[in-house]
Length: 276
Image 1 (cartoon, rainbow, N blue to C red):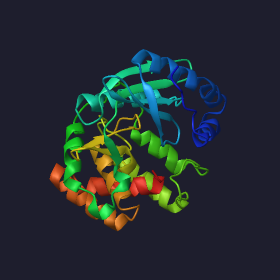
Image 2: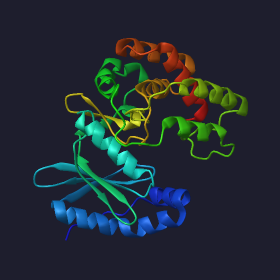
Image 3: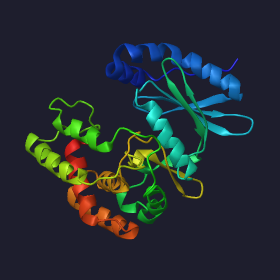
């Protein structure tokens, strides 16, 4: 019988705190669901990969190296649809199956090898030109779901939540004055907007490299938006939230992509205040 790994304690903890009873039930059932998937694919788990709110297992089958990812997140179905859309564009790993259970959503996808996250590369050595292909591929594409949640509404909520706890490690909530100004900028960005396909969380942790150095996008946020926002968040994260440096990176990327530099810099101000 295949040996099934346990969910890491930090993931169990985080899921319980974020989703309460639903997270608790998920943590009780998820290893049994993994056992069923491994039996179906004749897969052997080889490694549990780092994650905050999901159970991510690398597994080998007779024909593929796979990733099996489970989450109790209510937004997981939308995330899966965006993952599928990115996969069809050839900028995210191939998806074999999306499985919905009473407590979880599983995505079974190809494993990118070696799958080195870009967080392992210093910002000064980040290959900016390598980002162009995946960003350009998303540009102008429709959102995969009608009436999909928008990155605009999600940011508006974060900026107006005075007790925001879902913060990146080591960061504190932005001062109220900064958030109020960001809400005004967000309102301006919303004028005449057309929400389409975007990743929504293009950070170094969600960009992985294969053996040839090609970059792949993983773990989208599952919201509609625009590529200018993805450029802004990528620049902000590469610059470690230093706005002046982020603007320089964004201008370089935006120019190569033919995007409005002022709009990208406006997104940087909003994303910085929202602590994405």
